[in-house]
Amino acid sequence: MKNKLRVTGYGLRVLGIDPGTATVGWAVLEEKRGQIIPLGYGHISTQSTRSIEERLCEISADLEKIIKKYHPQEAAVEDLFFFKNQKTIIRVGEARGAILLTVKQKKINIHGYTPLQVKQALTGYGRAEKKQIQLMLKNILKLKSIPKPNDTADAIAIAICHINSRKINHLNK
Image (cartoon, rainbow, N blue to C red; front, side, top):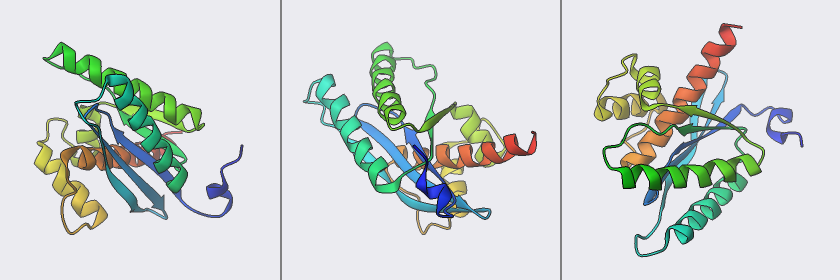
């Protein structure tokens, strides 16, 4: 299946995802002629009273709607990193698995980035504070305020990281 967006002259559309079980941050950005334009962003929330299976299905269904609406060509998903709480890492891993499956079933290429890579891509410093990252993405996208909740801002940062990494990788070829 050919992607209609490339044929019609649109720029590259990237879906950024910050995985979670309670909250999944998402953002769709378009890079066109060196400009990064936010097309949409938000979060998917699930209720803790529902079973994990129901929550994963809800995440998948909502993600399918986002993909159908924005037609991203590529996706950037935050990789899992060390958690002190074993239960948390397992649940986030389950959510990430559902996200990866949903995106891949839509034939979208997926790229993973660690929090360190995201921080470095936005600020040049891998140990940057969350507030620094949020201010950078606000400035890059010329937003009036920092998107909330943090999961949404993280998804935007992941998408920007991918767009910038893609440019660097292209230059190195």
